[in-house]
Image (cartoon, rainbow, N blue to C red):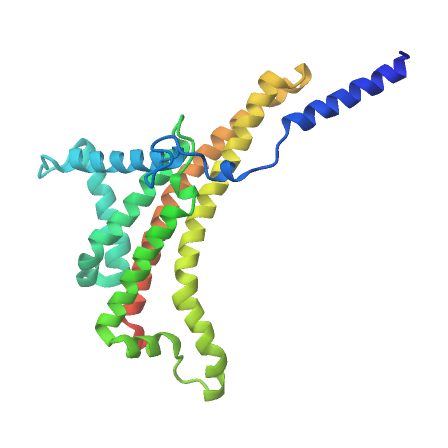
Length: 275
């Protein structure tokens, strides 16, 4: 075999090997197969196990923090109280006022800490993904918020008056109602739960993908790439560590935004007739 023919054959084998290693994404990449109770209605995959684990961690943390509360809090109780005071003063009281804020504080605090703890698994080694990166839990929380603010509005005004107050813009020419009523209906009753769901899921999924890319690149440069490419590994590692710190900020901001918007929607429903 001549040298050019040998080189051509090597290139062909190399391309064939790469093609054999590459596979197009399948549904199992997005919906991992069950690892427990497979074949039953109670199947649990890795993401569900992470969700259960972080929920259990949240419950344990709160029980330990307040099982023997002190007048002057210390340690875990102090940290938990700082979080609760933040939700009460910066979200509930700020948006709803003290009276309504006290009424809806348990719901909004539950949403805030649930999102926060489920998000936090995204930066925990060995877990490496937030269970909010899949649509199920964000959708459940959005439905809870949706049902709550609509219940508040319907209870205060009655169904018909609440609907009219929510979708009819006052003091505009009658002809514009043909355009504005459908827009207000979609905005209030369709886009609100949709944006709550997608905002949380998309941000946590994007963060997970970026971390995977940075640390996968580091692994590739260190162990699989040519010798001269190993010099890039510190840069990808530093980028991954830097993005992890940024992701910690996103984890908190997503919990804050979800809880804040829930409070805002409740407040809008309470004052629907004033718009």
